[in-house]
Image (cartoon, rainbow, N blue to C red; front, side, top):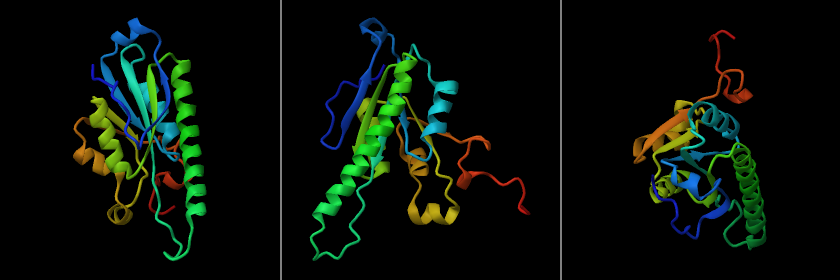
Length: 189
C-alpha cells in the first residue's frame, strides 16, 4: 500500500480522517484519490462508491482545490478586506463539501482522508497524488466544449495526460447530469 502519513504542506488542510481500527488499516492496499468539485461531486462520489471503491481494501483521499482568483479591482485600491472575505467564504464551502462526503464514507466504514487545498487545481491534484503515492485518481468532467477547453483548460484532460497513476473520469448518466451538462439525443431538439 502507498504511504499517506506524510506531513501536509502549508497549502493543505486536513478536514477529516477516518479508519476503522489499526488492524483494518494494515489491510488497506490501494490509495484512491477522489477529486471533487461542487458541480461533479455527487455523481463522482456515487459512482466511486458503487462501482470502484473496495471498502475493506481502499484508503479514499478526498481532495478539493479552491482557486484564488485575481482581484478585479484596480491595483491602487486597497481591497484586502474583500479578498479575505472571499477567501474565507471559499474555504468554508470547501470544508463543508469535504466534510459532507467524508461523513458518507465514514457511515460506510470506508477509510478516508479529506484534504482542502489552495492553488491551481491541476498542479495541486498532481502534487497530492505524488505525496500520497496514489494508485488511481477518480474525477468528474465539467463537460466543456472544445473551444472552452482550449481557452480555459480542462483539469481532467491535464490530469489524464500528466498523472503518474491511472485516471478514471466518471461521467454522469443522462438522468443524473446537471441540466447544463445533459447530452442531446438529437441535433434537432
